[in-house]
Image: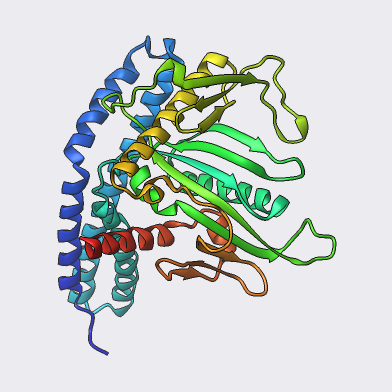
Length: 371
């Protein structure tokens, strides 16, 4: 076996980190952090709690992004020194430790490098994810809830704030639908590859005969809008319905009609929000989701491939993009990229990065092939 060329590998990783830093625009991040830090220091910030939460959340995410990059750069410097000292002293044990650490750093750099592939118009935005139960009855509703937990756990692993707008519970178990936002830079570009139909195969816990059941759920991912985005909605194009929000089994039902459902009449797009206590707050949040979905629809129609951006899928046989098989064997396999994992439990617990990275690389390759 040829000796590992540590010097060449480290120099390549350092060059990659320089490229990543330019793409992330760390200087711009630090300037925004300084501005947000001044806002946080303002004693009047919490007079508007919604704005205060946005400011502090954005500050936390940006600081986390910068800290992640700096920590990885520091590890790379340290492993370079480890290799140099171990080589000079012919310390095989120390060299083995450096070899192991360099492997871990290479994986981390590769993960961070994927960010540089996100160059779409809205890739840098935060993301709104909508889940919808498909074919499969109660198992599909349960699967939808499993997917919601999976994406929230993925966000928690990365210290990304999650804001839940709406959860519609099924009668027996699980969710009929759910909508939530992940507040992080590039969340849309990162998670947009998750859009599509997901398929679960398992022994149904809801079947007293213990039969195997196949169920489906649809995942839709759209970017969060900014004030500069031009989406105007006429008042007469919206129907507003209010109702009492509730939780599973009829628990946590409000005593007032605070939940809001907005229907965009020209397109039939429907969004709901029941997370806030105030009807006005719920309506404002619902409008954020509605505008994001209408922007996704508009841009996708302009490009003549609505399904590609909006994730408008049937959630049934024939159009799934990923299979989660728990019986008769255990595997999660992405049908587009071919990437698979033999540990579904870890995937459902938020271990999604390998699937996401493979999806982003697959999409870039597909775009180049179409060009």
